[in-house]
Amino acid sequence: MAKEELRRQVVIIGSGPAGLTAGIYTARANLNPLLIDAPADTEKQTTPGGQLMITTDVENYPGFSEGIQGPDLMVEFRKQAERFGTEFLEEWITKVDLQQRPFTLHTDHKVIKADTLIIASGASAKWLGIPGEAKTPHGFGGNGVSACATCDGPLPAFRNKHLVVVGGGDTAMEEATFLTRYAKRVFVVHRRDKLRASKIMQDKAFHNDKIEFIWNTDVTAIIGSVFACGDVQDSVYRQAVTAAGTGCMAAIDAERFMDHLPIELPSGEEVTIEGEHITPDHKFIITPEGEVISNEPETVLSESE
Ligand SMILES: Cc1cc2nc3c(=O)[nH]c(=O)nc-3n(C[C@H](O)[C@H](O)[C@H](O)COP(=O)(O)OP(=O)(O)OC[C@H]3O[C@@H](n4cnc5c(N)ncnc54)[C@H](O)[C@@H]3O)c2cc1C
Image (cartoon, rainbow, N blue to C red; front, side, top):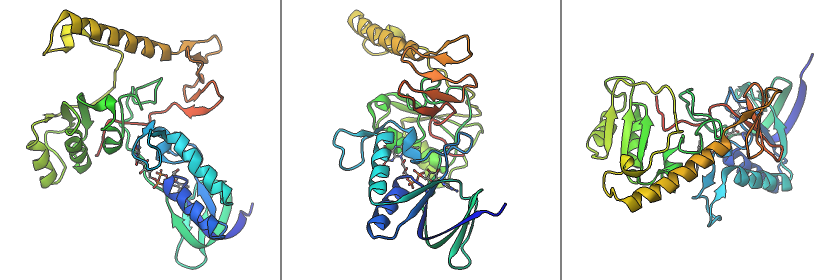
């Protein structure tokens, strides 16, 4: 069957912050943009709205003095682009021909001719693909496991803690060095006995007192249901009153964690105490508001290979 053909003045690929901003500007300029974005796909790791859809607090986006949740920010971006008339199409661009004008873009169902093309196809994090990476409540993604040191390192959850960066390339060294500004100590776990990072990045990391290397080690799972309190996790204060305080903190953390653990129903579906349903194939979480969220691994510590 012949594919449907469309012709537009301006076509934008990607609905992350870049694509949607391009949509706002070109729509306001009466250029009738068509914004094409890949549908949600856990294998290909795409989500309309881009990377900020998989994060929680965004504290450094101007205009939000109290910070904003990533998905909420992207909803606002999209509404603004829609308000000025940006047209949306949810399909994968599988091929582009930029040799002649108008440019030709292919999706599974359409051929799109564009006088001008704005590419805002972004990036996606590289996952380890191990148990424990999945987004909370099934794993620790967004809850201690992050794919972006610059974004999440300054958050209270990571401050003054022992952090782990996985990888041995330039990005791993850069992220590890950056995290030493906030962390108590940064452990770089690498599966070989030498780094692949450039010499200058290696030197920086080796000379940083806060970075420790763990060689020839594969990270195979992230297990976070252990909560420590009292003198076992305190080499400084070791007093009854501090032990009691951390006991209270561990109990509350454990309770919160348990609240997120799912209970299996006879149908095979699982449900958490907070009313989130997990589909029998474990691929999706349905929130009490009916929102369907991918339950696939989404975040790693910081990875670079
Ligand atoms: C966990 C995490 C936390 C972050 N936190 C912060 C933060 O606090 N502050 C901050 O400033 N930045 C943060 N970032 C970085 C920020 O998300 C990115 O810089 C930003 O999203 C980049 O925007 P973009 O529009 O270029 O691309 P993206 O957001 O990556 O969007 C690109 C879009 O293009 C689509 N696409 C790709 N290829 C195709 C194709 N062939 N066909 C159709 N569509 C396609 C994708 O599906 C995606 O929706 C974070 C990133 C991550 C991963």
